[in-house]
Image 1 (cartoon, rainbow over the protein chains, first blue to last red):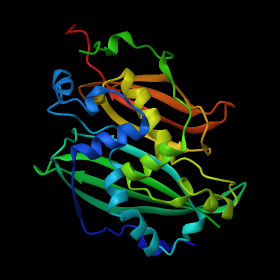
Image 2 (cartoon, rainbow over the protein chains, first blue to last red):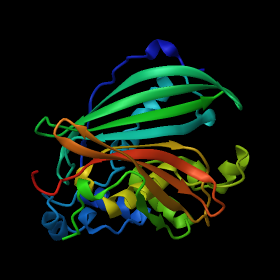
Image 3 (tube, chains in turn blue, purple):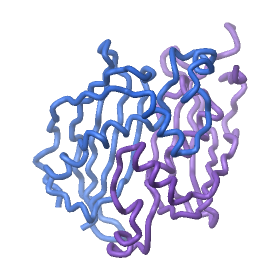
Image 4 (cartoon, rainbow over the protein chains, first blue to last red):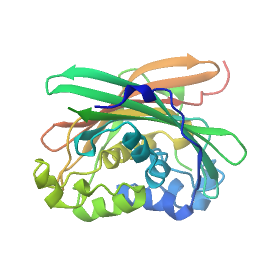
Length: 148
Length: 145
């Protein structure tokens, strides 16, 4: 069972340099052929400063930096019993190759819910990203479900 | 240039253009793992899936959310997207054909922004819901009134 005493805990900021190849790899795996994610000229024509990060890119740094893994370990969550419940983004500014993102993650809530399949803990965490100009660019909210 | 889309031309009840993806293939899950940094073996090693009782490999939920993001930004330019969120409802397996649909549910003003709200759903070829959610986009208007 998830440890509820960690609600509100903030984790040390992490940094992540946005690489052009990482932006491209994500849309290639998805099979999204929209040129604004891979073709700089088209992206500029469409009003961006460069190729732009696709809508779900914000989850990538969290995975590579293993931020979520650390949090779930802190909460004593059983890895074999977790599911990805929800993912939400709020977009403030575009993310471009070369950006140095700073991510700040905190635990928003840990709630127990009763469902048809039994009790579940819902762990909600939030990562706020700022870029190298200290502009807030993105908020990512993740809900992890631990089945009991 | 992609065709401009205006707040004025969108009505509540309008359908987002549907997106039907090619069948999900195993190599796509390997690529997605590398691209996203999600190396949970549930998505690439069938033995793990069998061991935990789900019968084989399942796609990353985030891959399916990526399909939904593709459908949205095929219609509404990324730069207009303000919010996007989904709940992960069902499992996707190799061979599944995912279809993304959406419906405009609201038009509203948020400060100086003119915002559309749209429900989005991804289903498999049997019609089972894989993810469901919504997005909000702030659109330009046709000049001043």
